[in-house]
Length: 629
Ligand code: BES
Ligand code: ZN
Image 1 (cartoon, rainbow, N blue to C red):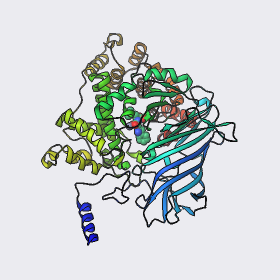
Image 2: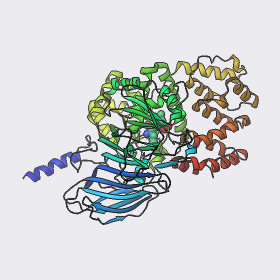
Image 3: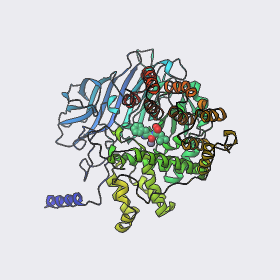
Image 4: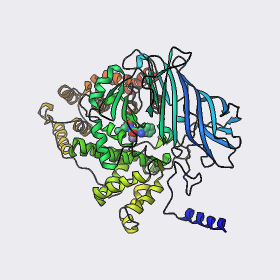
């Protein structure tokens, strides 16, 4: 009787389409409507990794990490195996907690997903220990020679886990639905410091028995996080406090510039908390990486990783810090359940980032940033031929999650929330978002589960309202619904006027640019007509010195224009820019522009890439390999 009741109850739960459960971080192993992560081999519903304990040594000579990972499992009674994700790893041995060897096998390798590591479990086993080392093909790690760092004297190592690269340096269930706590001991050569996305237990390291040349650093992350947020960096690092809970790590030659650029971090943190509730991670620090870091920023919990290219000297590019900080809620607290739901991370974060910027730097700066993002979205949408990639929720089965990376999850996602803001008002939307972060803290969320939550808490199950707002189209269809709200920036309108004046012959010195901020300059460069003459290019460069701009975004925008107009005086600067930093967002479009110039451009792209490629991170190489041929 009891079972019959239970069965019909479960049937009920399973059939209720309006209420899919979010993927759990803890609790029952079998879930109603559990989403499937097509990018992981793991079967977490029978045997799930709950905690990982790393013990690794960084060997800078061999350029490998080697050691063990002890995985604590939660299994259901029938579990005979646990399945992990691995890619380009040497698996040396697998044992149980007592050291007794366990049988394991490695499945066929897939170019995107890597392989399944299938470990036989003795009845009731709750721990497995894997001895392994990374290889030369480990995509997550970049080992830098001293010459590739800012200081030039010490080597450097960093990891990049998102989206599915953690499996290239840690054998675990590499799915954002399988949240895990972690502890780690990292042995590094004396003189270097290890940092991780975790609580640092030994700020100065500890002696390692019998190895006088090594120091051990220990870490602990007590909150269950998706494995893509496990992160490590090792280098000659210094730390400086910015505020009570905030600080920066950087190489000694960069630390001063970093601390002053990020001076507003504590205020940002306070603004964020005021908007959407308490910061749940203790400290918020930023690590400034060497210039080859392939992203602008990466929201590793407690320790954002950031490119040095945002050190403009005038805080003009710090919206990136607001962005990564915002991920402490959207992304790290409530995490996309699968990579098909990536927009839940980035769209919410872009919206939230802009609210932080508005709070600290004012409405106009925030509007400029919105307008620039919206313009890029429209450009992206008109260039994206494949309709699937224009959707917020996309189906990536059989493809790399990276293929879904574009302005769509970021800016269309943010535009969706701004549409809701326009409809419901800030007060109601903010209350909703705050509640959302509370309800699903430390859980993973799918688009479907989000829609159910939105219906219940914001739309109040009003189907007519839902139709009127075109919610279905926003989440599941290509293009931009017609109730999107185009941001209007007064300053950028003035900038467009000046760009038009210039194209009609007004001399650069006569343009009214004296109070322009970086975002105005960026918009100016994007608003220039496509038929500028050599003389006009020279006049602009002479007046504003774009070619040698110390602001990476301005220099990048100018170099794109310079390539398209074959403006030779900028080419040495272009070559320097391409060979001294590896941020993919800058690197890839510049090679694309060059390849569009038959003859000189193609020749330059090939020559510079041959020289620069060894210095780029694998993420950047993978993208540029497809551009330069
Ligand atoms: N989480 C992303 C970076 C990322 C996304 C890495 C997907 C790997 C796969 C990060 O928060 C981000 O969006 N960075 C942006 C900067 C941001 C201000 C838009 C970047 O790196 O350009
Ligand atoms: Zn982001």
